[in-house]
Image 1 (tube, rainbow, N blue to C red):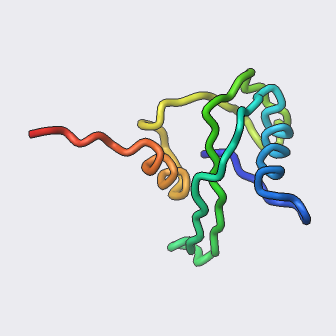
Image 2: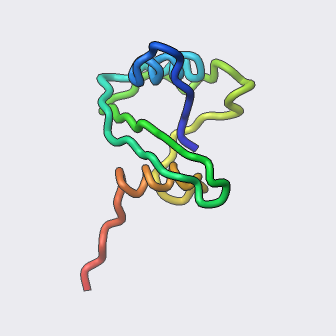
Amino acid sequence: MFPGGRKRARESEKDCLRREIKEELPKLKLGRISLWKEVKARNKRSGRKMSDAIFITKSAKGRLAIGDKKEIDRAAWHKPRGIRLTPTSRYIRDRLFPRKRRRS
């Protein structure tokens, strides 16, 4: 699944993202980040409200060294297809990497 985290009091969404990345993947350095989309929905199974702020960056440098082994058991780069995803992660993938339509 994609990384996630909760915003602290008086913390901006960008500050939250940078803090979470630093805590969980301390060797990874992100370039300039920008808000791509905010998703607010209700989980169809649990009825729980979901609210996600999705950011993008054009550059990421460093290693995927894990900072907090209690939160993450492994980190790896993957191509966007062929991995099992949560509904929110699938939504993000499909919007960022739409399938190319074949011509007849």
